[in-house]
Length: 444
Length: 113
Image (cartoon, rainbow over all chains, first blue to last red; front, top):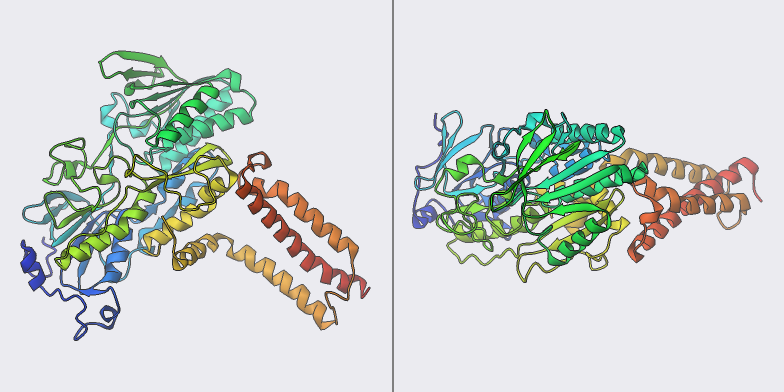
């Protein structure tokens, strides 16, 4: 089955313009396009995914483009507010607070294909879905998010989360709830060995493994049983955090709290029955540790169907793992009609919802510029934000970007990114979720 | 990262959604008490009620303790200047709200003083 509804593929940009682009042409255009910033086009735009990035782009482009055919490919009916999962797993939020229907955020006039993308032929500008149907595009927005590669940890499966002392806040909302129960069970034991992990790959919400460590520590301290619990943190990286000042702060805080740090050691195998975990160093040395509770963070990459496509990075740090995009324009490095946004792109940092907030206006502006055959002037500075929870009840609002050596980029001059505060916690607890939903609607 | 005025309103519109019912109940009580009292010749400056003032002050003071708890936090984590300014402003709001309800209510219960 083909979902083609409009003219056949139009590989050339000139041809694309012939399809009906007419920026600012007021005559014969719908009223909406007469107003400033709306352009008329017959381009077929496909957005892969309706996570934070996909929905933001659907709303922004549907407002900005008149006459375009915008299709969102997404199998799920529900939208998860994933930044809330750490609070669910920490016992602060109820799970229901993070769920809303996707339909609430999809703008009218956008075609929603409830299917799973299975392949991308970038040369033919064609998407193949899991049911073998195809979609052709003039502009593609890759907003698929990323995939969790549990298979790279021998013996690990998301089904194990919640059993045998295994937690994983990333697996799903349900798994976040099961992680909470696994932590509850461990705390009820009154002591033991806890291990928190972070892999050797880039991960989404890179602060989450640290937050889970701190919130669990917070709960242990609340029971006044700290001396009976041993906490270890294993990370595949050499540091704790991308931002240098925060990295130093975290190392110091972990040491103060007697959380033993193990760098350049990533989880490679787990024996759930025996409660043993194997860690491997870059030189191949392995170490097996017993645990009573382990928080597993799996290696992550672009989804397999993106990895198998021509769109994946062919060289450099992101080779074979992430989408090959220019980190400033967010345009694909080899296929100019393809743009990437969100977790899937190859970028030094930026796998957060806050990054999407900064990326979405850039991708919107650059798609419009591309359709108009103008230079792509909008640039993303790598902005990202981590409301770094250091205790249940306080946090640091860490905002920075990859330009200028990860310098701080605070949104609010009155909130110091180097300071733990109740205000930052309240922002995380009450205001960032509303900001996220406003972002999905393209209103911030 | 900056927020436009429209963006701030968009965020606030989502932020108040879970609390709309509570806000409406509080407003309804406030308006009802004020309205009924004023229909019975209550005037803010003309009526004096020390207990209403004391209860309002106590409510405001206690808010310094329970407001952080309401946000899954604790007073000990209120440390920065911004934290304290926000907490004091919220506590003053609680005190004012309580006084705006109790003061006309005392007029209705006890009559003019």
